[in-house]
Length: 177
Ligand code: NI
Image 1 (cartoon, rainbow, N blue to C red):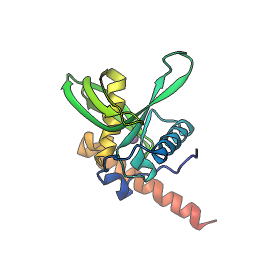
Image 2 (tube, helix red, strand yellow):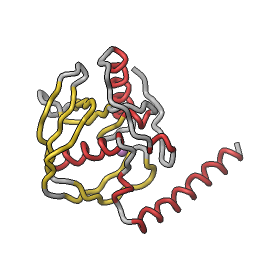
Image 3 (spheres, rainbow, N blue to C red):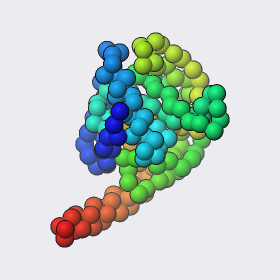
């Protein structure tokens, strides 16, 4: 297991569509462990494989443990698909790949999810509210979509301006070293 570097917007790798997982082998399990360690170190509510530079359809979602409510565990979804979308909810989102920014995003309130487990077994379940929000955010990543694509163009332009300034300051700090 290892903590990996999280790729940050505007890196074009975040915009590439990811490929389906075909082999459910040891390297997939290793990747899932790396994702978990990286997510909990950050910390974040979920993480997609392409956020650490692996362009395949794997996401993990942080959840309360089913056996001990004081503990956390994570759910790994391989090749996830969303269907039967219902209702809507608006809530604040951030992203480990989008520095220093959060915004209200409209999502479906209830979704149906079909995915494979790390062993390749097909699972289907319904998700609502916050859980559904995180899954929609992570599945977006696999399609090269970021939460800032769901906000108004004005807000996005303001963020891009702010980010430019942040990156410039970082560059200046590096140059002075
Ligand atoms: Ni994200």
